[in-house]
Image (cartoon, rainbow, N blue to C red; front, side, top):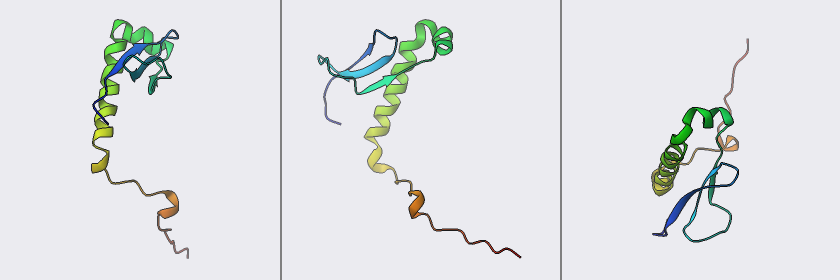
Amino acid sequence: MSSETFEIIELANGDVALRRAGERDDPLVRIHFSEESTDFLREHKIAIAKAMLEAGIEAVQNIGDLEPEPLEEELEPINHTIH
């Protein structure tokens, strides 16, 4: 990713979102917590969402280091012998 500035916001519906700073376009990422999770997390919801977003950004930055998972079509079939 480039060195753009991003902001974490809480949407009117309670979702937490990541968007480019100063833009009003659709967010890049939205996190929806269930009512049960929201009740449990209370005032920590934003901190938890921030940690989730930071982990996602770190994963994207390291994506070049990851080996792609083979698609099912690329997996070699396993032959079983039935007697």
